[in-house]
Amino acid sequence: MNEPIRQPRAQRRKGTEVCLTERDHDLLQALARFRAARTSDLIRLCFGNVRKDTAAARLRRLFDSGYLAVHSDGISKESVYTLAARGRRTVEAAGERVGRIPRGTLEHHLAIVSVWVSLATLRSAGVELIRVRPDWELREQQETLPLGLIPDLMAVLKINGTVRAICVEADLGSESIPVLRSKLSRYGVLQDPGLILVVYAPKQSPTRLKAIRQVLEETCAESGVLWTSVNEIPECIRHLLTQIEPPLRASPYSDGTSDPLTETLASSTETTHGRK
Image (cartoon, helix red, strand yellow):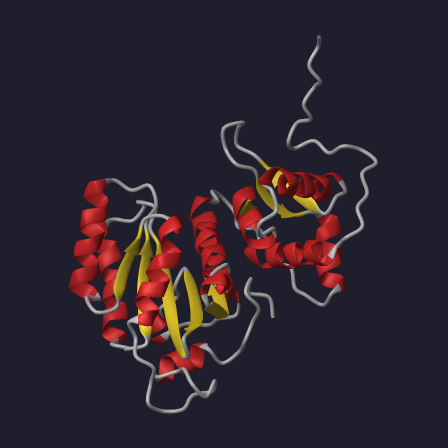
């Protein structure tokens, strides 16, 4: 018996139409901010406990009907989705902005998105993502921290009445350790008690990870932490934030912010996937 011919991932099935659900709209608006995201991250963010094959089938229908575009570097790698023309028009019709897709390799960009999604899906653990800005939005909006710092990802989280800022630097091994030390030392100079600095370094060698840990100890001993996988983020966040005692003075949230920088970063609120 001949097996059915499998449709190529980057080839649309003609004549497919969908009626967009609320979840579909959320996915399109999230992807407008992500610019590009892997299949697994979109499923983690938007499909909750839905079966992965069911979620993947929905993504395929959104692709076939012209809302999503798909990019693939080979059968062994995950698909990467971006908004197609119909998806962009849908997002813009809802009053949201659609930015350009990053040029060149997407590995660093996708690493940032994976951390973003992990932070946005912590609500079930009692953690609320209040505000988030990736480096591409910070650069477009000309927002910087003191000393001209532009984190790869800046987020403000709230847990147990405490609001804290997290700055994430994604390290994929492309920068030398001296360059990384120079960057992280500027965070150390801030000496901000409410700021947690994270280096996200997936798939790095033991030697590289040892060097990163040493740099964090030298530059940000009290506030620096290393993540090597998104799987460890939920427990790490719970541990980090529950160790911080609530502040004694009031804040814009009445029960959380304890330092001026975090108050500034938390000056606007957003939903869990970052959409205003």
